[in-house]
Length: 552
Image (cartoon, rainbow, N blue to C red):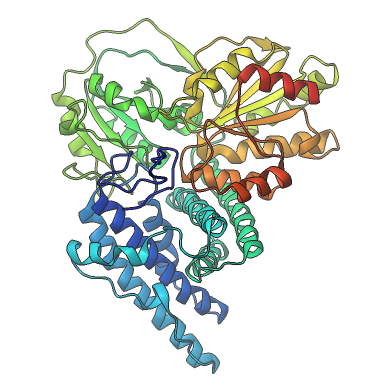
């Protein structure tokens, strides 16, 4: 195996990239190799589908397969090798369909059929042993093109992976776009061509950032049209007496199905991790048995899930080994998520989950009521934009810090806790993603009725942060980079890579990124990002705050 896509990547004097029998995320070498082959097949689909689309031929099954399959290969999503064998077989069928689509389009247009090579002509084996033998052909390892080309190819691939995850979230909510699917085909075909053109690779990375912005806009529309615009809401973080189901991951649709199916059963539903913002949506908070949020960020689940006396559902991503903590007999997977031996929910039928929840002890008494506040998405914040703008003009608010992104277990993440704690009282903290669990239970007070901590939502809600920044820039008649706003970003996996590319493609500068920089970046590529976008690694929290405020 060789994997270098996330912050958990093995980096030491001997290795850069996970390349032993098991990755640091818990993914074994077999699954890693199968994921590489699936991604290689997606590139082959892209080669044919892109050329077919240029000739006016489009197929919805081909379009929709790519984001769904891509999503399963993100960090901490699917660890089930057998599922990937099936996915590769399905990818072969889809690629052959795309090939036929392309050939028929050529015939109709009177164009010669190109003989496409690489992923387009790759014939995968039909069993695990044969696929493992083929895995080196699909590996992302650096080749003779050099470390800078390798870094940019990784940036393209992992950014596109993040786009795929957001695209699939949007599709589940009924939002998709033929044009955006076409961009996936175009960029997958570009990746398959193994370009060594530095400028073309950089340009494609920025284009992928723009693609992600369009997808996040679709996702925001899907969420708000389905569940209403989030509103500021106090969420209980202490438990209540009764049987219980815990829902983790990101998927609001799965959560709604669970809430609907548990009505009248006496089973309470809790959110975990990135589903905390669900409590702010009117259509979800209307369920009285959505009683609160349990636990913190994904990396603590082996302790928190072990202590939860009910059934657990993992949606979308952020799963880690459920055998550590001894709760594998009461956790279920849904959507793209998978783990060997765990029951997987099909067709949104959660009856088995409810049955397990009713068999468990549940919480035996109510805990003292504790709450935190969520629901400050773009609609809520911009509804009081005049108050915010006036507070800036009068000097009551000196600066905004967006402290957002993924949490993780790596050393250095206390930086984000310290940054929030040390941010001066005349500054406002905006936050998205599960990194907020590092500091969201602290009391920060208000500035003129505006809470100093505004939770904008999950990582899927990065669009809200961008909308707010663009609206403020418009109100102050300046560029975003001229606002008293600094982004402090914690990255972990490929969704974060896509969001970073979006921010860079919008020309947003002076982003502080940490706690470590992506291992796939070369020194030269990093220097380009520093020179062009003033990208900065996180350092000492107080020193960074002082430098930011002194420069503003």
